[in-house]
Length: 123
Image (cartoon, rainbow, N blue to C red; front, side, top):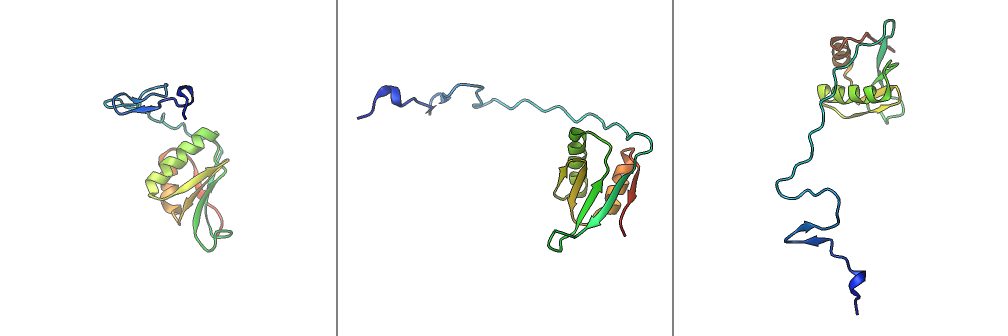
C-alpha cells in the first residue's frame, strides 16, 4: 500500500521535468558561454620552459610546459588552446601544463605567436 505523500511525480510525458529549477525542454537552449578574452602577454623577463619527458609515464612521451607566469585560470585557458592546437589530450597542474606526445616545436611556435617567451629545456 503506497501513500500519496511518499511518491512525488518528477517526470510527465506531457509536462516534462517536474522537479523545479530551470527547465530545459523542447526549444530551450543553454546560454552561450562568453569567448575567452585575448591573452595578455607575459611579464618582461619571464621565460616558459618546454621539455619532453618520459619518466614516470611507463615509457610514454609527454611535453611539459613549466614556469608559466600566469594565474591558474589563465593557465587552464592556455592549456585548452594548446591541446586544441596540437590535437592531443593533456592537463594543467598548478603552473605547469602537460600534453600527451612530443610537441615541443608546435608548442614553442604557438607560445611565441601568443606573445610569450618560450625555450627548450632539458636535453
